[in-house]
Amino acid sequence: MNRFLFAMGDFLSRPPGFYFLLIAMLLCTALVPFGLTNVVTYALSVAAIVITGVVLIQGYRDTAAIHAKLDEIIVSLRETRNDVVGLEHAEPEEIREKLHTLEEEALTRQVGST
Image (tube, rainbow, N blue to C red; front, side):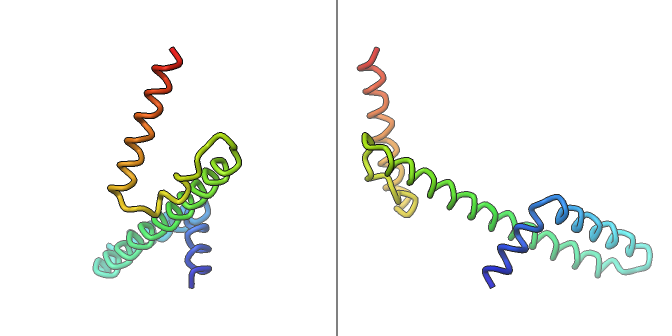
């Protein structure tokens, strides 16, 4: 099922998928004068739900890929600490605390270098 959802998300997030949805919406709109307003409303509601799912799936994939790349950079640099690797899995309070600590450290380094 995941493979199907990722494939659908990939297709719908590219221009051919967008054109497909655009044509489907135009066809639904063309059905309104024939008294099929309920069908059109249903179809467009389903399309909106599908598009929302596609955005969430693509966002998940993009975010996961960015985290993997950043983790690779952190691990590959010898001067860095590895305690931030996997921070995206922490509780929001822990993330905020770590971010505050890093910002203070960066400010201290910046003031110390000037």
